[in-house]
Image (cartoon, rainbow, N blue to C red):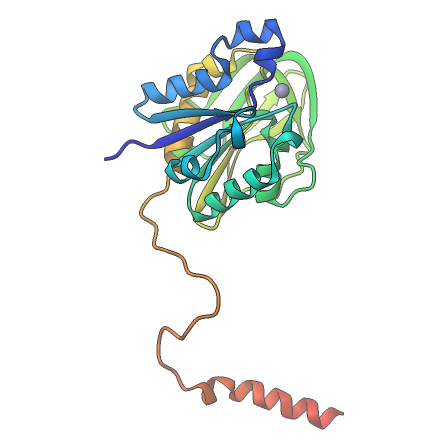
Length: 260
Ligand code: ZN
């Protein structure tokens, strides 16, 4: 089987602007994620905000099976043309794994139809317990019923998202809040997974269970051999007699004419 081609996109600003964050992720968040995906047998490349077209040219997107997205402070700096190209590729079948503060990214909000994607948050380094609520889901494969992240930013409900097609994880935080942490969506032929953890100040992406979830999610979101989709005006796929099909409608028209 061909290797899954993953592009890991990171705005890559916190690691450049803040020394303490650079210590957490010396190769950038994108470097860390691409590293463990590569070890899992995937073909990886990275792309960042400051590259031309944010590193997401049509050629790169065409070669990408799954795009991983981490952004936080510069969602608005992502060019609309790139956002549109990403969203179109998702509808064509490219997988998308949106991480942590990517909940407010243009791509996720556009694909999920949200104005804000708002949520509650608190940066106190609280313990997070991530519970598997759909143990049969491929993204939960190989996990125990729960795993613990010792220190994370809290995200709490209400999380302003459309009801996910499948909910795989729910988080509990030390301060009492809960959060829908692993949400699956389908758009056109594309699969989307939102995964909550990954605040830049903590080495969350070094945690084995977190790496397993992201690796599983990339495999789940990778396009399979789905049939081609056609849209627009179309001819019947089986022969039928148009007069029969419209007889009910004709009757309705007669009744309306009688009313007036
Ligand atoms: Zn954060």
